[in-house]
Length: 160
Ligand SMILES: [Zn+2]
Image 1 (tube, helix red, strand yellow):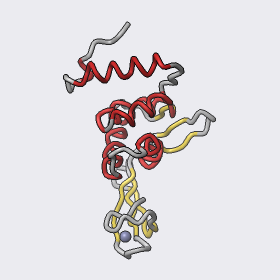
Image 2 (cartoon, helix red, strand yellow):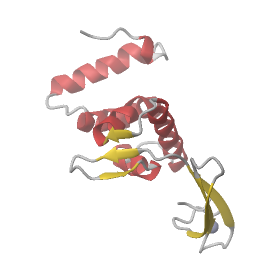
Image 3 (cartoon, protein in one colour):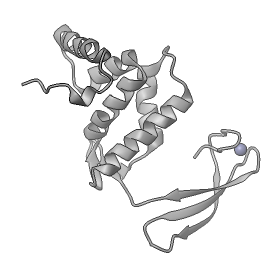
Image 4 (cartoon, helix red, strand yellow):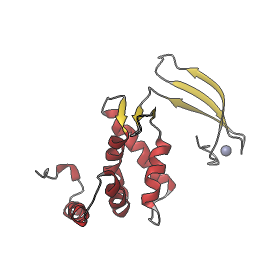
């Protein structure tokens, strides 16, 4: 958990309590770097099944580290990635399902990454949609081009 004041990458939990509704846990944390305190709230669990079969809690940090490589050399900031991870979490939570496969999280990332940076999107899509030929890249690029004029990608016709 990053410190919201100095962005230090670690923090210490000094107190945990379950919220009255029993659906979330509030943790009081202290930053070892600047000493300031802040509160985080963890809500109902959202879990991810990895390809290996291991189940782990959904983590925005994992979303960020998953897309960071695709964003190398692109004009994408840490703040952009944090917003992306938040949107991905909102979109998977809105599906109302408590458990996802890692691959589904990857697919949920795609539309948000596409909005952020098209080159990063293509790099990431090539892994998650298992592109195995130039034709796959060509069709993804022509999709990007055909949607460039209309911001609403969701209204594009679905290819048969
Ligand atoms: Zn700090």
